[in-house]
Image 1 (cartoon, rainbow, N blue to C red):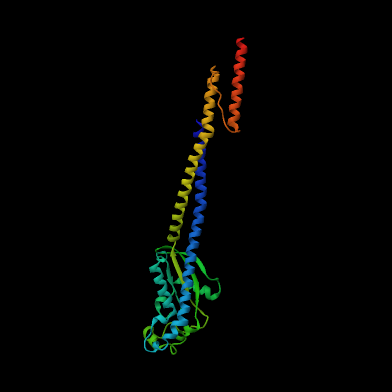
Image 2: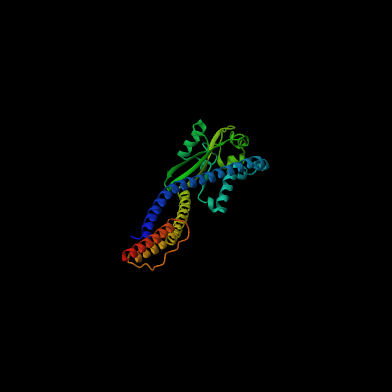
Length: 292
């Protein structure tokens, strides 16, 4: 078996080991990084919604206090504004299209905001102080596994304009939603939660794309390195050793007219060439002595 073939067999074995080990480590790391990226995006989405809620309570709601006596404008409701802004963010930014944002409330004015059982459990844990926000985890749904992030929602003083008692609430709001839901809130009470859900397939798709790109680059780099090493081994080892072998064959057959091989450098190949030249001269002198 030729030297280059042996080298390439060893290189291929090392190549396979590097690919397997690197692939195993990088796949786990990329999955964690992708989930962390989703977590950061979800956290940013929640913070944006909180900023919109705060702005609505401080700047928009006071402007509509007089009009609400004659017509109820949902734009003065901080939750409505937050949901509308997040929806527009999803429409304008493809990166967020698969993100779902909700604000489930234990006692909502709009019954569409009632929490699901799992959301009620998280809100209850927030109220009991059993968990520290934000809560990040995964759960199974009929449509597949999702990643979720949740933070508690607390009632602020402006919220009590509409949510203290039916008697104090705007008549126009009562006409729309009725007097039975969304009342009895207290300042700084946890009344619900912000929920962001993302299909697990989204971070997995990002991890898979990064994994394919990384492994393709690694494979191309290793192939290029293998070709370069093949060329270097052929030029620095195989070619001079082959020439030395041919010279040794000629000398062994009695051809002392073959010129010595001149090798540059001070490596083992040069030492071998010099030793072969000395051996040839010794053999040639010995043969002359025998003839005499």
